[in-house]
Length: 343
Image (cartoon, rainbow, N blue to C red; front, side):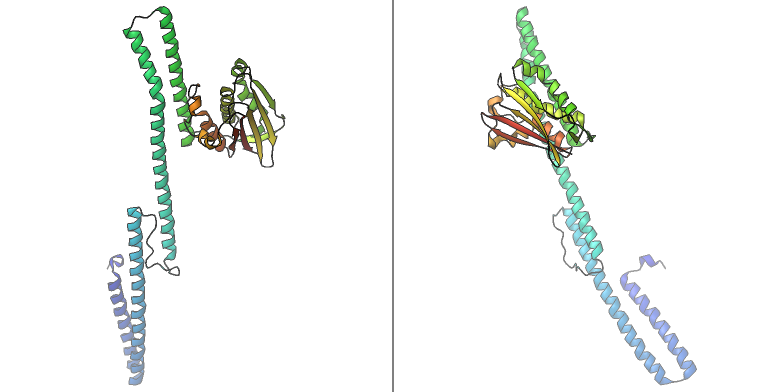
């Protein structure tokens, strides 16, 4: 007989039969040796009491198993249907099967979390594709227009040079856009890992400043730095330098000719603060949260070069290192971007 194939009812009848057979055998042995009918009567009464207790116990266990089975089936149905809350009908906190129910709830929460993450990643991917489509539309249209003009119209050498220069500018814009999008996708997918270590921020800031000084000189912008060489913070020099460059480049771009930019570094108790202050056009309070969004650009600066991804990338790079960026600004009075790096 295969015990694994026995049902609960068959197991009950089998146990009852074995119990009755053993009891009958014991009573027969007692009667054989004692020939006392009173002992047999007492034994029979004891047998009936034990049989009743056995039946009560088996029926109670069977009822518990049935309720537990129904609860498990209900929870599995809810999990299959993707319900946020599981049905807990028939589940008692003191039930001997509560540990199993509790772990099923944890499994359900994990599955819901993974499902939510997949939906979120799918939405972010769709948004990214939509953003790319929107951003490449203009340069591609310009390229087609220039190409059609050169192919279908007779233009002078000087005009050809003008069109080719414009063509080169649109290609550069497309290349910059593609590089920015690749960097964005790598940051968001976690492919890029930050190698944080305690090191001076002076060299990090110097590397970022070196990339914007030429542009600042063209606009006659005065750039000053106040950073003690001994100040250290836990950061990845390469990515932190790029994040600071994005902030500095933004400051140069939107600061008028003859303006100023000041970089101030201070050590706080838990963070190292890097302030990048300019006296540019400033940002209205209601827009300060939006400037960190991907591809966001204010209406009044649409004629300026850029695609509106620098601040987004800067915040992403700093956040991945356990830091954050704070903005303080007033229209017409300039802006202060404060970078906080953990010490």
